[in-house]
Amino acid sequence: SSRVLWTLAVTQFKETVTTIPGSSIFSSAESFAMIRGKHMDLTILGALEVNQYGDLANWIVPGKMVKGMGGAMDLVSSGTRVVVTMEHTAKGRPKILDNCSLPLTGKRVVDRIITEMAVFDVDKVNGLTLVEVAEGVTVDDVRKNTGTKFNVSKDLKTIQYA
Image (cartoon, rainbow, N blue to C red; front, side, top):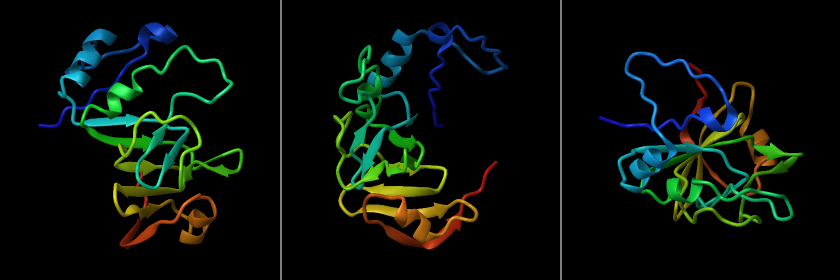
């Protein structure tokens, strides 16, 4: 059975969480023990940049104040399937690139990229394949907003929202 770890920022953001039957709450230390112990099957996280081969930059913008890299390096090096969810562009500039310009969190670690425009599968050798597009978005729209080349799946689908 698949296990998915949802990290809840209860203490950091002082938000109230309502549990449902079957849910559990655990400390940050326990969550990282599960991650480092390779007990998780899937990691979902955001990104500042991703390149065509799955390099990930998500922890620092040079010149900006940060408290630290957090647990992203642990997450992406844990051997789980890594899915990045992010906006396709930032201030009109692509975030999916030939090469990341920001410091890397992990090299060739991303398996799938999901944006508001498209879904890409990442092959660590052959690069990106566009597998889904949002309703009303064309392949040309995706090309104009992506900073690297990509293949288009022969079975290209429209993103289905639950």
